View (cartoon, rainbow, N blue to C red):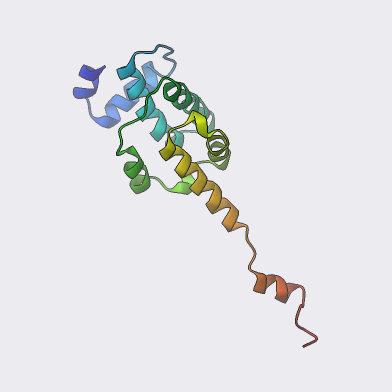
Length: 136
């Protein structure tokens, strides 16, 4: 696996991993590390059904003690919009913090927070709508 990754670009290696290793069920650490790195970005970039599959890969690799490279969190913050993580995926991650690396939990919590705050109606708008101060 290391030879494969060393001989291709990141995009090329992720494409090969997605195509040939997405259903890998083994416990070999290097392969799980590559799968987890691919899973992390795929949770943001794939179709929803594919995202769920990659979330399971992330769970499985994390349960084996694999945590992606330490800089992946910074990479995600720089390259991914928080809103690109579907709310359903964010809720699943935030609701099961023992199954995911901390950086994924942070992103999921932020996504849930963004969703919650987008639905907040300012008190001034409610007061105007409900005519709270008309009699004053």
